[in-house]
Image (tube, protein in one colour):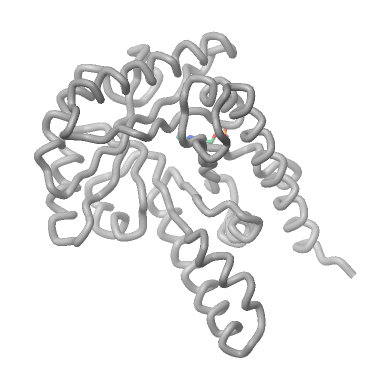
Length: 261
Ligand SMILES: *Cc1c(COP(=O)(O)O)cnc(C)c1O
């Protein structure tokens, strides 16, 4: 007999495979290799149990937009992993552990990070997509100074200067890079952007292309001082346009939870 949770797990598995295939197809259409684009599974719509099922289905980069939800899920995942280790020690479920060892879990934060939440958030995340101010940059640097590795970040840019969108102006991004290149606790890895809410596919693609051009230009200006390889752009509705424009990370939420929400 199948339980509701078996069915849910099967739906999530199907969704993950469909999204992975669509992303691979978008890469082929753009003349890019599928391994140049990673899917970041956005779990903000669901609780920890369903997020864990997505991870089990094979999505190893997960993202939240609120620090508190990130903490809650990260705690839950740590407990699940301990339970798996116990199972493995008693001879059960070995293969899923080996699978996780090959593709370790990574948490990303894609929403605003308040300075009073830094201490608890930095040890959990592999990448912050949404660095958007000098004050936050300095606070992260101070906090990260006591840690072995710098905090990896993307600079969130608003290339259209659209006031309904978050993100920094191009000049602010350039100023932030100028500052961050000398800070040992910060490693700027690229840019993050969202398309305008009302953008159609052509419009979204042009916006994403402007972000890529900005990245190329900044990479030229900061040669030897920063390595801006990552471009986080594209969500469920516009990842094809983002991939065509050069995205390396697509942040997919709703498509992964179809039939669940
Ligand atoms: C929610 C969210 C996403 C995912 O959007 P979907 O349209 O559900 O795929 C991507 N990026 C950010 C910053 C988000 O907050």
